[in-house]
Image (tube, rainbow, N blue to C red; front, side, top):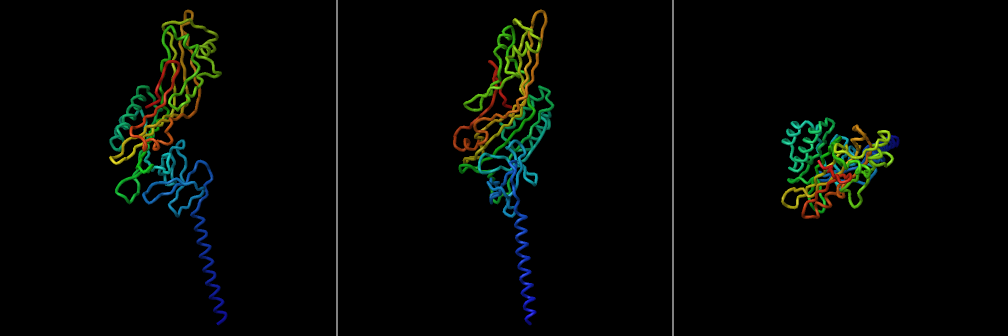
Length: 338
């Protein structure tokens, strides 16, 4: 009898130990450590919204997910291939992704008939397509991120909230786009102007306008021309000209707010990744026309004041905000806006 009790106790203790061990193992398997900077932790609330987390570990049993940086800290990808947009609030917004060549206007128009985006977004995409076609820019492409429907129990869709308002974002990412060559100066005064052209100035980033040297060594356009043409000096001719072209990636973010009468765009913000600058000069020197070309790699990002936090403006102001970036060379000003 005593032996049977001991065996029963042993069996019970063994079962308890196995249950504790199994539960512990399962708990550990549900928790993943996240230490790399290109990962974030998100959780999903009862409204289906994705909420940011400061944790460095994810508990898969509590509707928490790992998301990986996909696009310059604007877009993150979940492990199930869904995409999230960083709204600059406590939320990420679930988005759908569409990619197309800007030069393929026919497919773009078909897409715009199938998706629900604001007129301002459609007009911007059509204008970008027209520009790519006119430049014969086969490298120009667009990735469009629009709000995705949430798995929500409510009757109304709230993509994310800020200051008590429902908000949603659309991100238009045009890459490998170009301003095309723009004339800085044409005619006999070109040489005199070229002697004072050193920099390209970025406008619209706030109180400080960054200056970017157009040439290696921070020389002027005229000095660069003389260096490239073995000391050729021009005196000024009506056929002279100086041109500048910029190649960049363009980000436009449209933030809409529902203040009781449906979603309305409250902020349009702008970011660029400036890739390269090109200059082209032609001067009539002596009895011949002489040209010089320059290309400089920049690889820098510039953004408007509210690009990272557009909802903070859209929810607190009556009139919509439209921010844009441009550049200036001498008296020439060109919008990056697409």
